[in-house]
Amino acid sequence: MSQSLEVVVVGGGLGGLTAALAMRQQGLRVTVLERADALGEVGAGIQTAPNAARVLMGLGLLPELERIKTEPQDQVRRRWKDGSIIGLTALGSYVKDTYNAPYWHYHRADLHQVIHEACVDPQGHGPVVEVITSAEVREVDQSDPARPVVVTADGRRVAGDVVVGADGIRSAVRDAIGGEDTLVFSGEMAYRVLVPGDAIREDPATRWLVDRFQSTIWYGPDRHLVHYMIRGGEMLNIVAIVPADDGIAQSWSRPATTDELLEQYQDWDDRVAAMLSKAEHCSAWAMYHRRRDPLWVDGQVALLGDACHAMLPYQAQGASQAMEDAAVLAEELGAVSRADIPSALARYVSRRSKHAGMVQDASLRNKDFYHLPDGPEQEERDAKLAAFNGESDVSYHWLWSGSPLNNADMESYHYQFRR
Ligand SMILES: Cc1cc2nc3c(=O)[nH]c(=O)nc-3n(C[C@H](O)[C@H](O)[C@H](O)COP(=O)(O)OP(=O)(O)OC[C@H]3O[C@@H](n4cnc5c(N)ncnc54)[C@H](O)[C@@H]3O)c2cc1C
Image (cartoon, rainbow, N blue to C red; front, side, top):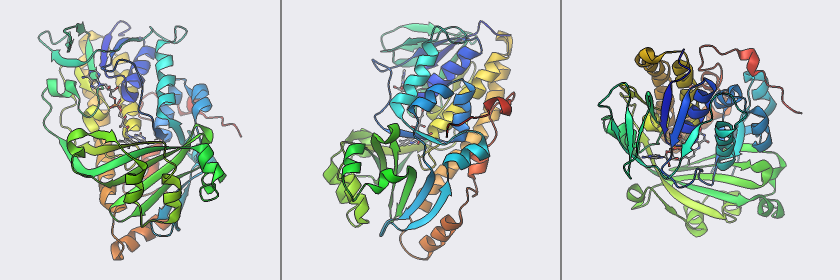
């Protein structure tokens, strides 16, 4: 057994920290190197489907997740022009009963903090994870293949038995191991928006948003809109996808104004302007993704999350797939001695790359599917959405059921939800 394996995780995002926690619980010694001066997440919401919830619950986080979650009762699809409901899929209790795990929304910072605290909790299982901030990794030295070394911008060298690149879509670890250029700009950008819940409640034109918590998608020509409540109704989180403007492909992100956001949706149903006009925090993000990456592992260096399968957020699965990677990687590394690290990493790739690649591809297909101009194709799509019960080519059932873990005891994940 590999109780003393040392792992260096590059990147303290949701993927990197979930991996660190899962490996800690396997008894591995983990150091996380994070480029930012402080650990944190962007000020926005995140949806986690049962597949991610199952990983997080398996790490013992359920009580903390209960505290920070918001539970949507259904997923609603609306038409851009008049807000009419195209289709509705049950979430809430239906999902918990069917998948034995919940579909929940969070503020990203809250979820990140819960995972981080479990990594450094002295009462937790396994050795405490060491987190080093202000540590931007630039290179990986594999001159001793059995002890890869990461090198930071200021020259620090940190060695491990395994290096995990969890450093996001522009991964430096990926570059260091010679990953081919799979980056694609989708031609779209996302406005990430937060609206105070009080402003929503005070206006009769938006109060409907708090009557019943839902995960809502509006479909329109060239663009769509997703919104849901977080922090129990304290904030409405909105993601508004529109064609990219000049410059965003180069800058990747920038601050944005409520006026420009409103302009993007001016012909839409009045309810959209009513919620967008209350935006308090608004930023624009270029939508990049990757083609399937042929290289996930080189020697004893492995990639995880957006570093190897960055996808468009049109299935809300990027972080969830990173969490599945984390669980599988920890399970494999936790079961081997030093000599067997290469075979453990090979099994990690074979268990994860095809699955994550299918989710990548399905997210990309949604780009066209979501943005059809009005006409026969859109009508056909809406008919499909009206009949949608969670089953399509990459179905919710396929995504949400089961566990990525070999040794998963599904009963131990039994979820006793509070009513
Ligand atoms: C608009 C939008 C909405 C989304 N909604 C959802 C959703 O609802 N559900 C979902 O599952 N997914 C969603 N996603 C996808 C999700 O955000 C990503 O897939 C997820 O954040 C990837 O996690 P990661 O840890 O792999 O990478 P990241 O979150 O990018 O984290 C990488 C970390 O590495 C650090 N880093 C980078 N370079 C270095 C370096 N050289 N050295 C050290 N540290 C470094 C970064 O500072 C960062 O902390 C969404 C994405 C977008 C854009």
